[in-house]
Length: 109
Image (cartoon, rainbow, N blue to C red):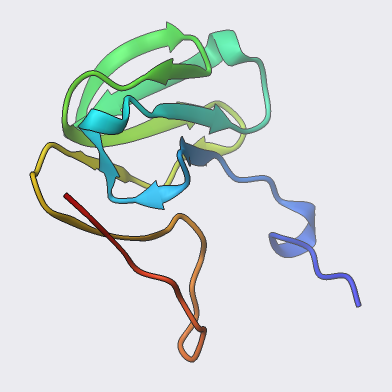
């Protein structure tokens, strides 16, 4: 059967990463996209817990390592996405994983 993504139709802000692996790596020149209710012009971005870009676009190419979040009025603050600049990174798919799920790990050098 069909299951809603959130209870009683509530919408939440999601921060999506492309390519879809976490932690994201800086040398992929990945894109972060904020999805939620409201308009893209109302998006506020946070980097390392500090307001970083207010009323900006809904997506951008990452050029600095750190932990990113976005906020949309009406749907709230997103999950955090960490972007690292390490030489060796163990990544998992950027999906919600549950205990018992089979998962593919990616070792990046």
